[in-house]
Image (cartoon, rainbow, N blue to C red; front, top):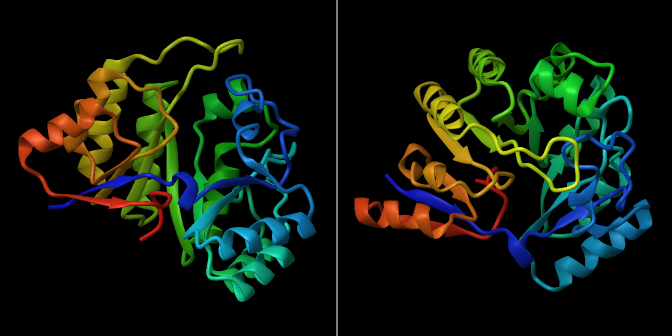
Length: 262
């Protein structure tokens, strides 16, 4: 067994195609995480940014952005196709909800895709979107066959999260990234998740998925980090996590990419 440590950093920066703007303004985030990304609000600017990154020798980038009120990230697909053809960058996309037309375009680009399947409670209480979990399941179904890795946020409603994990596994996926509800100061939802329930949910996921990754979006909770051996990979592992792995004598491989990149 090899446990992977992922350090995206400067070799795999995050780019927001909406800048700091987000129509949804989820109650646990309020668009704050977009502010630290590279902003590329137009197709031309995105091409310029990616061309410059390619010239600097970076491995690739995460293309993200704020969702619109329909749950989609407004990705400039033609620009992404150009970047795919004209640079050596590895692309990882946050798409949000997709339709068949978008998936046809994505198939031509052949990116990695990080796709979150939110629970009903997250959709209604945090995102406050007029969509359902089935809409996300339908999108994930359309994306099957592409290099898509499901993500599930845990720590908000344990029962729904475990049901969602089982639902995604039944769809035939062998890899899952778990991210953990992260309190953001100054937002309506700023309480820490129940650590014991988070670990129990990770245990459920471990029994179902051959490849389980602890993703980047998570509060650094000592008890969770010390469960490092539950996972096949950890993004930005803490000292707590690394101590557990070292004591177990498990070999480690470091990757300077997003965790979905293989």
